[in-house]
Length: 198
Image 1 (cartoon, rainbow, N blue to C red):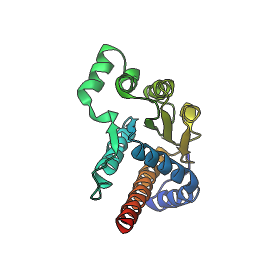
Image 2 (image 1 turned 120 degrees about the horizontal axis):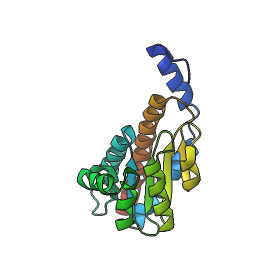
Image 3 (image 1 turned 120 degrees about the vertical axis):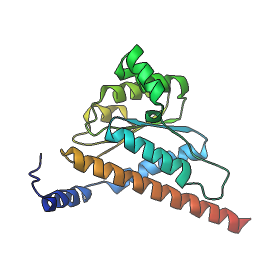
């Protein structure tokens, strides 16, 4: 872990880590999400703790924030938002099934399973990714450290190169906002282009 002892050193580390983020990988993930949109596929988001909050946040941004006068909408769902179902799986089966159990009901070939895990090693996230892969879904991940076990289960994995969980979570949020901004811009350009051609 880096030697962060002051607010200044925290922001210095955040800046240095931001400079190492691969914009190419972020753009790749944006293209995966846009492809799901254009082909009426569903995007499932999930994670634990702060990553659960981010899953809900990104689902909100994609589901509501991209609406721009078009009747077409993102089919997006945060598996973290159904608390009764999560607690039923955790209580009646085990906590490792809270996302996989939900995905087994809904995920289909070419849907997108979007996992968020700072460590990349959360067992319930890994199990859900395996269920998604077995169904033929596209798997996307946001991770940190070295990517953990998650990176090998993802078709595309954006790894924040840090060993500090707070820095990782900060940049996961930045990456999700970058995804949203890129996607919203491309959809707006597409709508404008159609309007001009019509």
